[in-house]
Every structure is written in C-alpha cells, then in structure tokens.
Amino acid sequence: MDLKPFQLERYFAKYEFSTKYLLCCSDCESVTIGDLLKLEPDATERFQQHWLGYTESTGATSLRQEITRLYLGITPERILVHSGAEEAIFLFMHALLKADDHVIVHWPCYQSLSEVAQSIGAEVTFWHAHEEANWALDLDELKAAIRPNTRAIVVNTPHNPTGYLMPREEYLALNRLAQERGIVLFSDEVYRESEYSLANQLPSACEVNPLAVSLGVVSKTYGLPGLRIGWVATQNSEVYQRMAALKDYTSICSSAPSEFLAELALRHRETLVGRNLEIIQYNLRVLDGFFARHPDRFTWVKPIAGPIAYPQLFGANIETFCHDLVTRQGVLLLPGTLYRDESNHFRIGFGRKNLPEAVEQLEQYLSNRSR
Image (cartoon, rainbow, N blue to C red; front, side, top):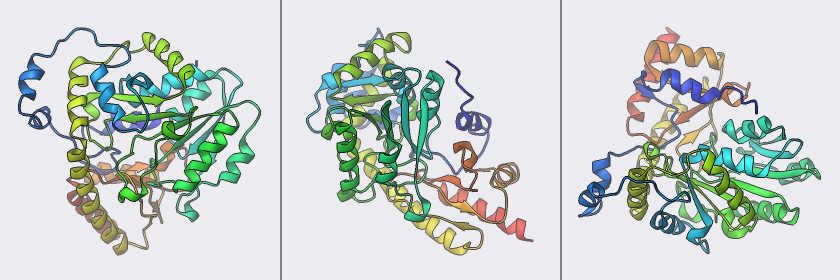
C-alpha cells in the first residue's frame, strides 16, 4: 500500500488552529458538550454514569437504532459504526477492492475517495462534474466509463466541494444502473439533511439499492466533528461482514462517551439541523451580496445543498491568492489545486456563524489589493 500525502488535510494542519477566519470549512457550526447535555433533563447524570469499558465493535445497539431513523427499511444489523467517515472509506475500499480492479469516482472529490483505491492497486477513472451545467453529472459518460472489471462507483451527493445535489430521477437511474451491472455503489451522504428544500432530499442509496453502501457522519450537517462518529448503512451483507472484520485492525470500537453523545444528538437532530440551516441560509445571502459586488473577480454556481461552494477566481493564481490572503488578512480559503483541479477554483465554507465577519475581512483584503 502506497498512500500519497493527504493534501487537503496537510493544508488544514498547517492553518486550521492558527488562523482566525476559516472561510473554507466543510462542517457546520458546532456546539459544546454542555449544549448537547441540555437537550435532555437527565442527560448530564446519565453521561457521568456512562461506562468507560470497551464498546461493541459494530457500535452500541442503541446508537445503531437511532441511526436507523435516518433511513427507511434499514435495521440496526445493517449499520456499522466507525471512527468518523475516513475510517469507513478506508475499510470499504479494502473490503471490496484488489489490485487491477477498476473504480469510477465522482470528481472533484475528497482525496481518500480515490487515493485509497489507487493505493490498493485499483485503477480509478474520474466521473467529471460539469460546471457549465451547474456541476451536473452525465450518466452517459458514466456508462461509457464502465469496464468488465469495474467493482465500484463512488458518488457524493450533496457534493463536496460544489454543493451540487443530483436530481431524484438521475440518482435513481444511477442506482438502477449500478445494480443491473452488479457494481457496488458507494454513496457518500455526509451532507444529507442539509438540503435547502426538504422536497429535494434524496432517498439514501442503501434504501433503494441492495448492493449500495451509504456513508453517514455526525460531523457535517450536525456540526459534531469532535465526536468522531461515522457509519455505513447497507443491505450488502458481504461488504458489511468484510468491513466489520477489517475494523478489528483499525479502531476496533468507538469511544464510549462519543457514542453516548452522538446518540443523544441524533435523537434531537431536527434541532441541530434547523439551527445550522438557519446559519447556512443567512450566510448564503451574505455571499450573494459579496459575489454580486465583485463580478470582475469571481464567479460561482450557487449551491443547492450543504455548507460549501466552489467559486472561481479571475486575474490571479489561486494558490498565490490564498497564501497571500491567509498571510496578510488571516482568512483561509481552500485552493482547488488540493482537489487536483487547475482551473483556479477554491472552496468556500459558510456553515459557521462568523462568516459575515470573515467576508468583511476578505473584502478589506480585496480593497487593499486594488489600491
């Protein structure tokens, strides 16, 4: 296994905890442990009494039961809890793939969605999103990319970094295609429930496709990355069992306090989702105004789900621009080159309360540059 450095994570490691304005984060506004415990009258006492022994490798039964409320027709036995989404991605790829297999990956993408497969020796074909079509995917292009040795298709919707959400009929057609060809669909759904209109919310792939594996996490929509709790939901018992066996070589089991707090949060997820969607909608109005004021410098496709978007910069190299911005103004944007994208795009995150202040600092920087 030959894993290349995770460029995005190394970038955050350099700046995340020393920069005042993180204008590119992919998660929503977080809360404190105290905030969570206030959600139920006796939660503090129960948390203090919570046993700190090993937890079940598959995840606490009560936590898995709570996770099933996100899905239709999925039982706790079809949920496998992980330490965040990253462990689940890693174990899925190792459970399914071998050298010389072929994988098709929705692009741009979080690096591990392609890198882990390549490190195993699998060949990756990128299924490109089209900016001119509002970051849509073309199913005909996917069909043309499928080979006899294609083992998996990886899709991310709502999408990081563009904020694109597949239309329902196309999404269902994708699931039918994968199932008909006997290809496992790995559906990265970490931004599910962050759709701006509930009517646009898609069914989970695991609900409509018996081969599919759906990825979820408390980090993004619910704003709880510090808990490090993610999961897969799947009817594919073969993949499930292989992932569960491999987990004995990684985390073995999750943190007991994290499982307690994640279960508590999911019982009240409507409260967390509602709060974060309010932040997102307010910040989108701020960004609408910002991009309207600077049409000569930026263009963007306004997202329809999630707390991130993928604008394009005019008139300067994006890596140079981002470096100068964080150095001079303390505002962090994420250059698209970290997605292996050379088209001068960047990721902007708007799920946190301090976005208006960060945008003010960005405008101050632009003003100073133009003098």
